Amino acid sequence: IITLILLCFFLRKILFFIILSAWTLTSCEKDTGTETVNVPIGFSNNITTATKAGDINNDNLTSIGVFASLTHGNFDTTVSTPNFMYNQLVEKKNGTWQYTPLKYWPNNDSDKISFFAYAPHNATGVTPSNAIQKGYPSFTYTTPTAEADQVDLLAATPIINQNGGSVDFKMQHALTKVVFNVKSNDDITGKVITAFSITGAKSGTLAFHVPANDDDKGFGWTYPSTVTAETFTATTKSLSVPDKSTPEEAMLCTYFLLPTNIGNTFNITYTYIGIKGTQTVTLTNQPLPSLDKWLSGAFVSYTIGIDKKVVTATTESHPTWGNGGQGSVDGTIN
Image (tube, rainbow, N blue to C red; front, side, top):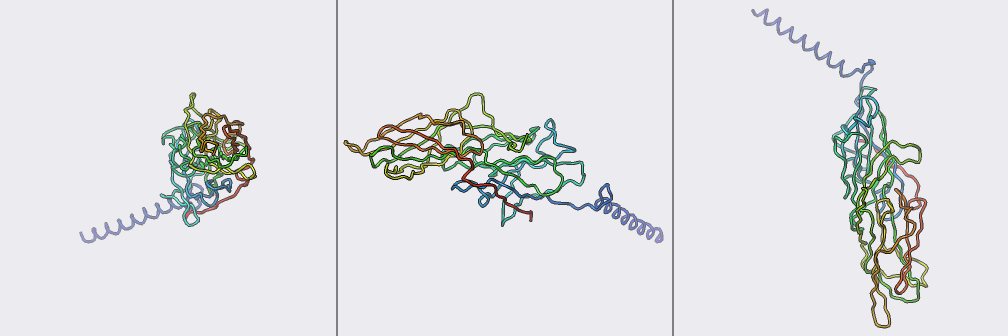
């Protein structure tokens, strides 16, 4: 009996080592017979450099929202969903881009991952498409009504059907940057802007797609058939208008608005010192020129010239955002 017990014990030990060896070989080898190394997915990103206050640039971009689809074969709009990452927070810490839980590239060469991204992560007004939506991800953006709450929203050109390397997002401005400046058009001094607002589209939907060419950003905006208008209020409550003899204009406000030319007008209230003392002028639904320049990534500035009881608006379209070029922010996963 003792001999039988010892024999069973040794047989169990031998069987354990056989199973362990088989498991080790299976987990360390691919179908090709080479050793498998679990490679973490790391992020770096290229964004369009901006130089004006309030813009997102290489130095102050700290978070990205990422969607990713894992597919057996290439991305398929009829079945693919963001099943690998859904609005994943990727944030910059100590100069590197990090996220949790850490995920890895597929060991099967036929498996692919497609990536889509926007920034900042969970920006105010962003509502992502749901996690089971098939095809390209999208999000609805409702622009905050106060100038101070608006953000320079970015979106990335999609990266499709990857199986290795570093995910190098090219982040681009998704909204139109609109700057208003003021100057005096007559000899009356002491003009002061006390209120300013602009009316425009309240919300739209950004959907990603595969770029058709090098000039295609890989995303586009759509709007409801009936666009809901919203009034966006400037922060400035009291801004002195430069006298006519002063060549410099005064910057009134900076908006980041949806790139549509539907229904954009401005409202302004200002005071001036007249013969009968302080006079207040309020003008509403004033038209804006050259609305066709409101495109994703466009930078459009307006100069409002103020006479005693009349305002005029002129516009300038800037070819590059803040006269910047492209810059890169590189990071690795810790």
